[in-house]
Image 1 (tube, helix red, strand yellow):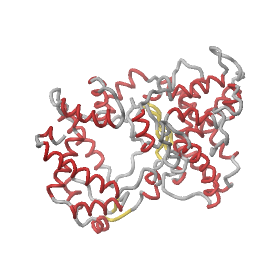
Image 2: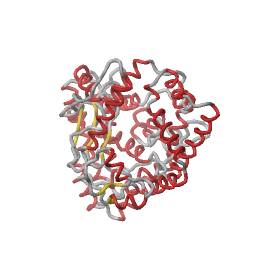
Image 3: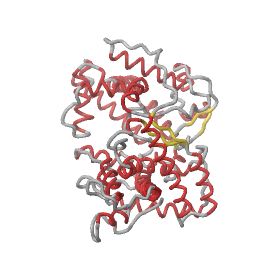
Length: 472
C-alpha cells in the first residue's frame, strides 16, 4: 500500500514494519474477543477529566471540539487499559511514525474506493490470504454492498417495495408472538431457576419489543450530495453525514425505533441495551421465510431465528441486562451458579468441534450464539407443535414425503447451507462468536432428542449427543 502511494520499496518496508509494531502494541492493550463479550468488562463510566488523566499524551478535549461533539459531562470508556496502552504508544513513538500509521489507515480504509491497483492489493490480503477467496466479486455486487453500507435506508425503501409484503410481516409477527409464549412456558418449566428469578425473567420477556421488516420512519439523506462522477467523494460525504448524525445523539434520549441493520440485510439481532428483537426484510425471504411455504418449514427456518434472537436476552451476555436494558444483576447468586453449570456443557461440547484440521472452536467465545441456537430451535419446535395441535394437523402428515416434524428440521438445516474455504474457517474459529454452519446444524440437532426420534437415529449415531446440553 505504501508503494502504491509513491513510497520507495525500501522505505515502504520500514513504514510497514512501523505500522505493524504500533498495531501489535495496541492489540496487546486490547481485551481478547472472549472478554469483549462480557459487558461488565466494557462499561467504565468516566468524566472527561478522568479520561484525560489516563491519556495525558492525547488531548481528547481538543479532539471532541474538532469533531464538533456536543457538550457532555460523562462518557463510557469501554477499555481503559487500551487508552493507557494508546498513551504509551504516543509517548514512545515519533511523530513521523504516527503520521505513517495514520497515513496507512486512511489509504487502507478507503482502498476499495481507489484505482484498481489499490482494490486488488486490498483484496489480495483480506480476500485471498486471510479468507482464501479465489477472485474479487463482480463490480456490480461491490457497488450494491457500498450503496447498502452508505445509503442503506434509501436502498432499503426500494428493496421493501419490491420484496416485502404486509402478509409476510403479519405472519412473522404471529410467529414471534407464538415463540414468545413458548419462552414464557419454558421459563416456568425449567428446574434450575428459582421462583424469584423466574418472575424477573417473565418481566423481561414481556417487555421485549419486536421490530419487523423496516423502520417506521425512514432516514433522510437529502443533505448528502451524491455525484455520478465522484465515487470516493460520495463515500466520504455519506460517512460524514452518518458521523454527524451519531454525534447529534449525544445528550438526547435513545431513539428505540432506530435500526442498526439496513432493511436488505440478511441477518437479525437482539439489542440487550434496548431489549428488542429485530428482523430486517432481507432475512424474511427464502430460504428463511416464504409466504408460499407451509408453517412447518417456516417455523424451522425463520422460527428458529426468532427463537435464537429471543434467547439472546437470556444467554450469558444478555441475561446481565434487565427489562429496561440497564446493566443490572437480577439473578440470585445460586441461579447464576446453576446457569453457568448448564452453560458449561455447551462450552465443552463446542470446544470439541473442529472446522479444519488442527483447529478447534472456542467454546467460551461461541457460548452466547450456541445457547441461542439450541434454545431458539427448541422454542420454535414447541411453537410448531402447538400450531399443529390448534389446527388439528397430525405431526405425521406428509408433504413431499416428509412429516411435519421432519419438514421443520429440513427448514432449519436449509438456513445454514454454505460453502466455506479452509482459510476463512480457520480465521472464523479464532474471531467469530458464531459457530460454523456445519455445527449450527449438527451440533444443535444432536442435542434435541426429537430430531433423533423423527428421523430414526439410534445411538451411537453422531446425530445424538453423548451428553445432551440444554439451558433453555
